[in-house]
Image (cartoon, rainbow, N blue to C red; front, top):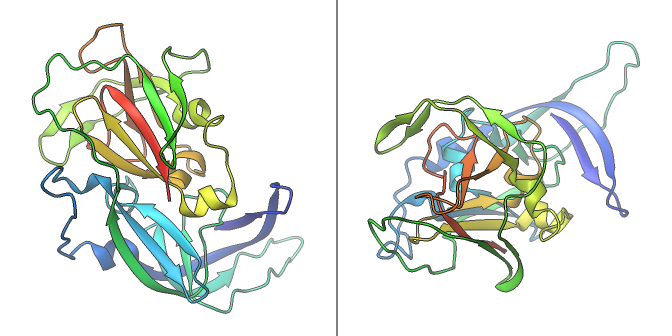
Length: 272
C-alpha cells in the first residue's frame, strides 16, 4: 500500500509504501447473524454499514457491500504486521507503524487507516424510504441530493462528460445472471463532487445511501465512491426519457454481485 494523507491545505502528502498482513474484516463479519433495525421495512443487507472506532475515539466507516461484495475480497484488514516496500535505487526507509491499523487496500488517500481499532459496530442507514414492491413502470425523473438531511441539489439531466464503458457479467446474489451487456456512463464521483467535496471527515466517516423510486436502497462509503486506487469506478448511467428503470441508474464496477446496481435513482443521502 502507498500511504498518503491530506495535509492542512487538503493536498496529498505521501507517507510511505508498505506491505500489511492481518485479519480480513470480511472473515470477521461474514458469519455474524445481524439483527437489522429496519428489517421489517427493508430486508437485504445492502443498506448496512460498519463503523470502526479506535482507542482515541476516531471513527471510520465501510459499507457492507464494500466488505462483502467486491470483486477482490480481503482488501480491508485489521493489520498486525507490516514491512517496508523499499525502492531499489533510493533505499528510502519509510517510518514503520508501531500499532495495529485498519487498512483499506483500495483507497487512494489512506485517511481511513486509523491505528489501534478496538470496536466494530454494524448499523443500518438511518433513513426511511417507502417501499413499493413490483412498481411498474418505475421511473424517477430526477435525483435529489441530501447532506445530513439538508437538500444539496438536484440532478435532472444527464451531464456532458467523458463516458466510461465496462464490460461485465451482470450477476445477482439472489437471481443469478441478468445479462452480459456492457454498461456505459459517467463517473458518479464527478457528478457529485460539487455537492459532496472530498475532506478528511468525509473520507473517514461519510456514508451514503442511494435509493430508488420503489424504496430499494444501498449504502456506499464516501471513500469507496470518491477515493479508489483500482479504477473500478461507480457509474451514473443515463437512460431514455420514460424508460422503465430510468432516468438514472448506478453501476458498481467494483462489485462481484449486481445487488447495489440501483435503478430509477431518486435520492442520494450523505450522513455520518
